[in-house]
Length: 171
Image (cartoon, rainbow, N blue to C red; front, side, top):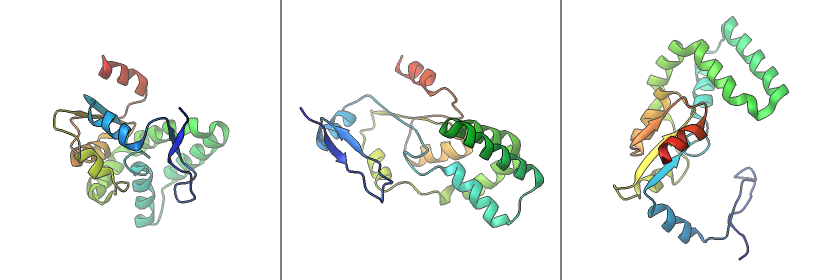
């Protein structure tokens, strides 16, 4: 059986695509018949909410303190050296440095975060017996309200080693 595009690469989806031997309908059936559905948050349910909130905070306040500039310089340098591998570490560092200030801002802005089209309908379409679990590197203050809005049963936040958590979940 040959692979077919379920989602074709286009400019609007930044060239992302999905290939499968199964049809969309077969995949939907398999997901809906599963006992557990596990999802990430960033770039799965919505564009990176941490990045969005951090950028919006800067835009609204219109300035950065010296410590913010130091973090930006370090983050850019590490990204240049290590590429995508540096991104998670960069956000953990951001969170650790600016935790209290960021938490207050997040609490005031969480309801403004927007899901990708179709996400709400997708997660609400599952039967109540299917366990929905979110596993994300995102902080609790962002991830938990999103998980609650989508009816997730569990939400694992600030997860550095997702594979280890998935192994525990899957038993």
